[in-house]
Image 1 (tube, rainbow over the protein chains, first blue to last red):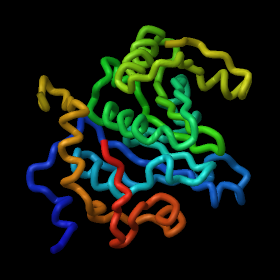
Image 2: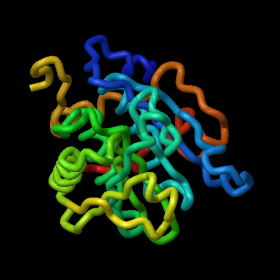
Image 3: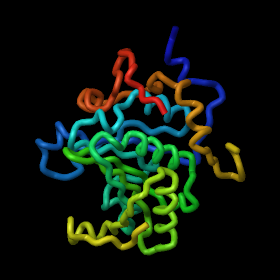
Length: 188
Length: 54
């Protein structure tokens, strides 16, 4: 049986946006000094079926190596502060104990590609950062100054994931200037 | 509820119905070996019994 025929289901379900998975590989990252130089686009998808074809074959956060960063961003938006669409934005972040972010990562992806946010136009994409002691999931947005939209996204995201802790929104520009000392611009 | 207005909105439950139907990598999937090794769960034919259940 040719398994590949399954991914070419005749009646596919188009998504509102095309999305691109990006991966930053820790094994390469350690050898290179410039941030982002090991960041690579993996695949762009635009249907529900393509999403699952990729997701079902990719390691989930708990199976990725510490140091790995895995992104899902709207097509044509690069997951970098310097990207013109991200430059004035910021991010909401949730933190999870080690190996506890798989379901939240999936639910975040499904909420993004299924356009479940009232201010979905404000969203650039999401990233999961795998670190030694924890995993972090962030949603990047476009216009940090639009408080109402940011707070709406933060609140909806918590509801969708049933996440009870307080979450903070950091403006990219603050993070660039102050690094870890950047303060939350908003909380939800 | 999959096609209200012009926006293609899909609920989580609706999207999850397709999870088990699409198991093969999409046609044209081609990444460098270092990314494949780090990221692809069942690269080139290995089974993936570790699939999480939701």
